[in-house]
Image (cartoon, rainbow, N blue to C red; front, side, top):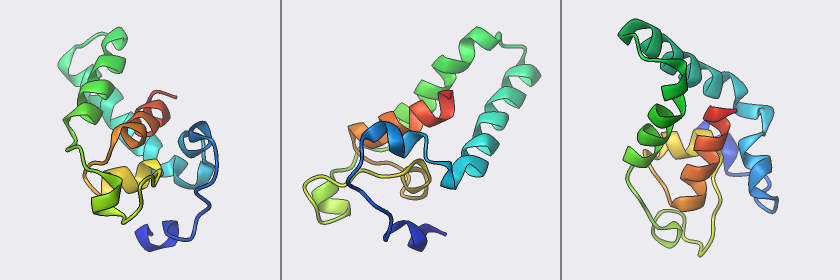
Length: 100
């Protein structure tokens, strides 16, 4: 699946990366994992955004010119997870998708 993302259009607003339906199933599975963990651990639902942001911020920061060979290379949420990290806009896109 990761290879199929290489041909996807990159010239779009960042919110369209976060709301792209192509990886909704994947994002929903991760979000459901957060919800299950919260219920299992007895954490309040109000804490979910903090957990999501902590998770996303724990991913390694990488530079696009090193990982993709471009100055600016916005990634879809699936790509950021697959690559196990990325730069600021990519982790923001991932956080927005998970919080949505």
